[in-house]
Length: 381
Image (cartoon, one colour):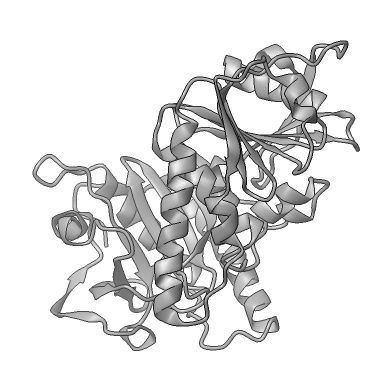
């Protein structure tokens, strides 16, 4: 139910059927994979109502603060230790804004349940069943629709991003396209193990975006120094020996629940430490098995290699078509340098975080015979 002063949010009606199809498809895949206790599928009208209420709540303020809330379509019976309100709240922008300060910490969701037209907020929960629908208010006018992967770690996959009248529905089949293996694992929708390359790389990418200073991470093959030919020597902050904490932790896989929690926290701290180095001017260099080699490295064109002149750009969202652009179109020097590096070092990948939150992964495409720039911030919000 909307407040009396807000009109309908047009994007809600437009996007609801597409979100419903994506969520239903992932639930069906999870069912086929043998996952049990799956979440309920919200119908199109319910999704529209959730998006509408969240959008108008995002534009309000509570004592000067922007509300940051997470709405989960889930019954109290589908959660562990639900916090139940004696009187459920109406799904109303005003009510959502008022309760926002109590649920702004990560991992706390407002539980929403009921039939279309009678949806209400029954309380809060920290647990979501596999395949559960979640809608996050990230910033004024910026909503992120997510779906629970079904892992104990509570990871989610992004389904759609709405920002004002801009709608981006994430392409669920992106990982099956002609991408390098490291990128396919990064984009995969299927649950990844905690030690998979997807998990560590996504954590690095999220942490790089978080410091908001911009940065470059070069992922190079282990056991070779060929990448030295594409950076200025000497390197300001070369490491000897390499820093191997992330590599060491990524190989562990504790079974005991308490040891697993401690291990996961240690891995996250180590990843944050490495990601923090990318804020230093220059590029951070890490092997594909996560050994840190250097930071502050200045990228230079490989001797006798041509300057990169064109790049294929794409984004893993529905309806997006890859386009070939002049390298100068990339904009900042970080992006141009990353494109040159992956042009010259074709078995390497470059991660580039922009200060404005954009995130691009550069990789050589043998099929296209060009550097391919993959815009992936829709996966990281």
